Amino acid sequence: MVSKSQKSAGTAKADAAAESARIEEQIARVRSELAALGGIVADYGSSRLRGAELEAVEELQRQLSTLEAGVKRKMREQPFQVLGLAALAGLVFGLMLRR
Image 1 (cartoon, helix red, strand yellow):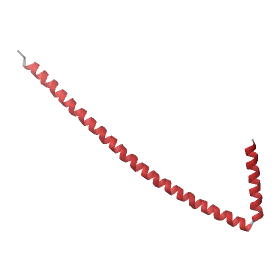
Image 2 (cartoon, helix red, strand yellow):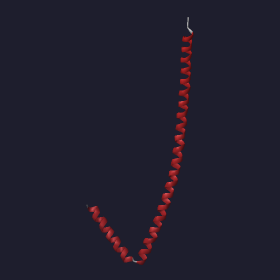
Image 3 (tube, one colour):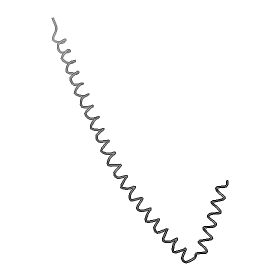
Image 4 (cartoon, helix red, strand yellow):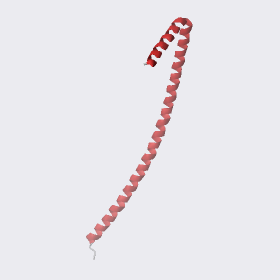
C-alpha cells in the first residue's frame, strides 16, 4: 500500500516536472524573441549607418568641390606660384619613393 505522503511526493515531482517544462518552453520563446529583436536592431542600425555614410560622402563631395574651386581660382590668380608648388610636391614625392 502507498501512503498519502508517498502520493504527495509523487504528485509534487510530477508538478515540478510540469513546471520545469513550462519554464523551459518560456525560456525558448524568450530566446527566439530576443533573436528576432536582435535582427530588427541590426537592420535598423545598418540602415542608419547607410544614411550616415551617404551624408559623409555628400559632405566630402561638397568639401572637394570647394577645394577644387579654390585651387582653380588660385591657379588663375597666381599661376607661377602654383606651378612652383606642384614642382616642389613632385620633388618631395619622388624623394620619398626613392627611399
